[in-house]
Length: 74
Image (cartoon, rainbow, N blue to C red; front, side, top):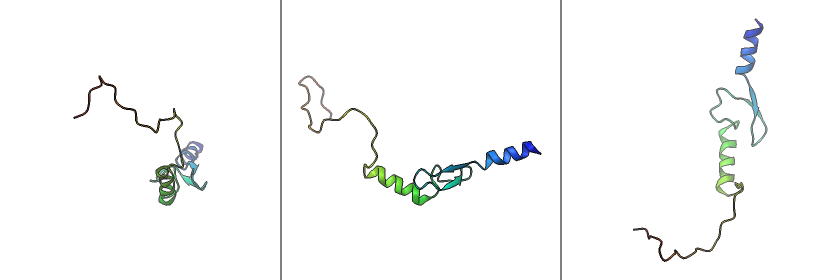
């Protein structure tokens, strides 16, 4: 009987939504790790508005002219 209870506890694992903090079941949630489509779309909007950034080397904003020996596209 205890083994069945452990399996049910594992299948009903709860996780917190990274956007709003609401606890939802992991299994059967099509929006995981988010709790809902709303939180999922808000997070996507933040990425698209560049509110989140991935660390990396800074990119030059000026375009550099191609080297004289570099092949050109075409």
